[in-house]
Amino acid sequence: MQKDRIYLFHGTDIPAVYARKQQAGNGTAETVEQGKEHSTTAEIVQQINQPSLFTEVRRFEFVNPLFLTQKDESIPAKEFLQALENIPMETRVFFILEGKPDRRLSLVKKFLPLAQVSVSEFIPGWKVGAAFNSVLRVQGRTLSRAAQQYLQAVAESWDNTSSVFITTEAQKWQLMTDQKEIPLEVVQESLPSYLQRQVFRFWDDLVDQRKRSVLEAVPHLFNDMAETLKNTGFLASQLRLCLGIYELEHAGVATRDMARKLQVKNQWRWKNIYAAAQKLNYAQCAGLLLTLYRAQWRQRNGYEVSWSELFSEYLRGAL
Image 1 (cartoon, one colour):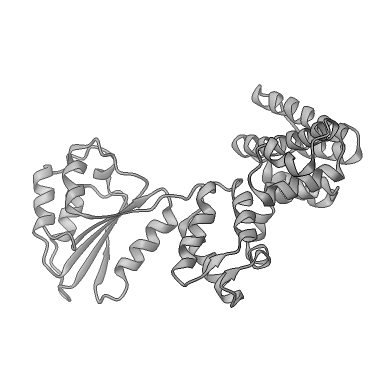
Image 2: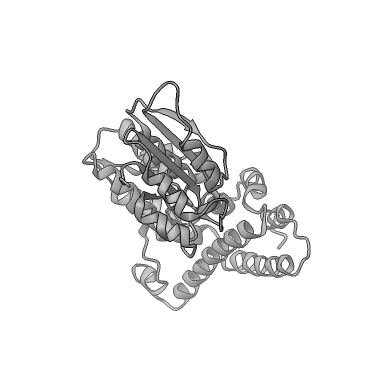
């Protein structure tokens, strides 16, 4: 069997999985024949063995075929693999899996060495800056230091960033400026508002007492247990750093030494947190931090928490 005829596109980054499948299919004159989703091996073999009345240049596409994730005995494994080996030279077969194949399955073990495999996984927040620079470098561009620090700080609150988003945004930045180093202003202007309005923007609004912005964001940031734990964890971290600044100031530590002592390495985040500490005071930070801890405990133990009411009370100075 020729590897250039059998393809597997899979991964957790589903937009990228389909984008790579699309790229592999571009520029060809193939007639595309879609198999039904969750096809069995018997159904796959039946379809690829069906003669075409119009063309021999064909491409079959099967989304989430059963054999990649569960035991499939609709036909013997040998018969399935033999059918793939015997497909005509002009034919290609694309298997698309939204997730990961189960490599414990005997058929999967025999199938994988026979296919060109493309894996697309989401990019974790701590790798986002490097991922943007990787795309930009292809065009001889890069992020400015300030832009990279900003992105790295903001991306800490992002979950599951798709490489498709990374590529699209990087292309947008290159159209917005001729500068070799993409400046911070371009990145801030272009990022979708829903990303910038995540927890970093919420923190800034909270510090600056922008009540309307805070209360509008609450339903989006505290809408389920996982999001709530992540975002309250971030807010608690910011508040603890502010309290750390106050303690170091009281101890007479020089401002230039504080970031190192508090182990804040990202300069953009340090500037943000130090500016916040100048606008708030010890009582505000300690009061909100204690309230967040109590709310987390209540939610974990099955009690209802009104996050809108909690932040309204903070903004009224009632905590």
